[in-house]
Length: 153
Image (cartoon, rainbow, N blue to C red; front, side, top):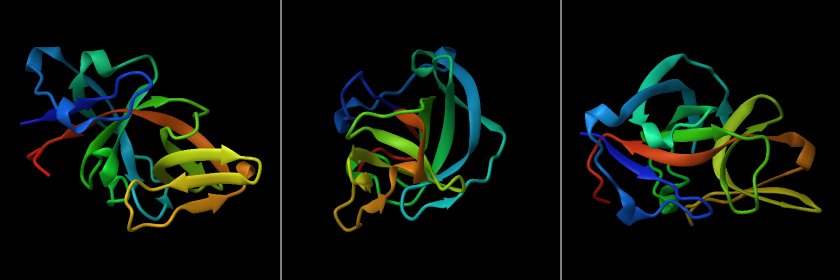
């Protein structure tokens, strides 16, 4: 059984919004590999696919499998598949997939100011990552989550 969590525009992912979707409303999108929700990992592209609700798909949509628990307070857990819309920028506080120094990728809340970039985990037991603006490239924003296991916390 698949459960889907869809992000509404300008709102965070909300726990009570899990849905089950009829198989007729699913489309395939590329599953391009893994993203770390913890310490950044080397970007290792993969080529697979995953089925998601058609209303979550836009022109530049892809998926990544989450490894780690740094985003659990945003309802994103280890093993989830996140639906990403390709973007080159993010607003402060948005949950984004970012590449660090052209090599490693991670999933964090992004905050930008004059002194640099803060990649903030959504897990109070983990510390933020501080970087220079030039060291970070936004790859996309989280638009939804696919979970194959029980949605109970």
